[in-house]
Length: 183
Image (cartoon, rainbow, N blue to C red; front, side, top):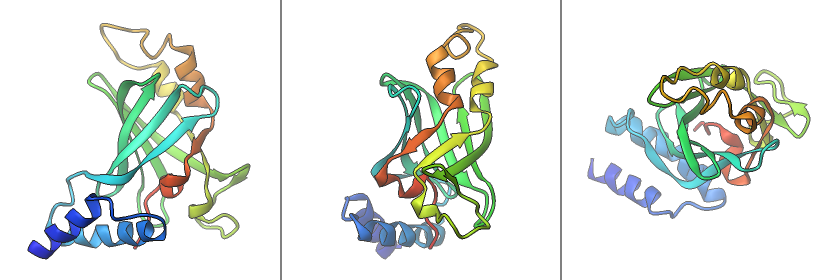
């Protein structure tokens, strides 16, 4: 147990960089499973940013790794709108997204691309590490019909947010493709 704590401490202190980052992230999952801390969110050594291609002031910052997802926040002009997660059901399953705040929640499928070429989890043309864009299917629809009793127009009346949610998101280089790295 002490060794696992030391390993987690070393990872969280930012010793991971470059190629060592992938190796360290792969090493993190077995450590978490062995320690029994699988439900806890672990801070990532780098922030994974997904930037709206339609509205640059809207972004998703993924800052923590949970057992099966990356977790962070949806931001508009720096204001936190709620919690955003993305992950993969199993090694070859669908890539998914979810969003929630104190009033409602929504989820759907993520479609990954390398430039304009679709990533197919069963194909070999585009590797997951090469993906640099994503569409969050259903995000705009969920936000348009959000159940928010006191402020109905926070999402519904926010044309920039709906435009961003319906469009492409650029995956930053530090994201490892915006999805889970498997060991």
